[in-house]
Length: 181
Image (cartoon, rainbow, N blue to C red; front, side, top):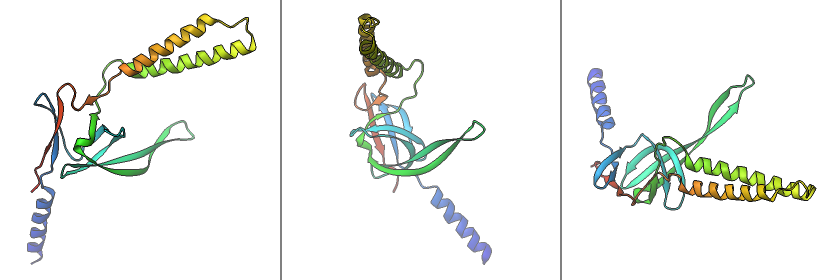
């Protein structure tokens, strides 16, 4: 009797674990680019501007459930770093609320370099202002104009950077596949 009970329990447990799951298809001009399943890491920006990067827990009834983990870097006494998960947050979004998906970056990061250039130009502008206030003879208006120009170039570079895969542009679309009974 016990053997029969164990066999029945094993069969039902396999049946429970083998249920199909809904998934999302990323298409470009009607051709499948990527299938997005539950259990995978998922990075996206919503139409309201919220950035999410986490584990896709479940896809059900046109809804994505994402669990995002908050990880802290804790320095050790010997100079190493320990990564500690402080907590996690669960979010639920409709799949049509996704504005853009994360894209693997290859090569030169134009947006990151633009932000670094803006930060450097802001530092030069502040230093030039301090130089003007302390000693007007050592003040260089050419340096001030050059730093303002570099800040403008940095701003343009930061706006020209990649925004990932924007849904609705360049033929990208998301399609929900309902597989669950």
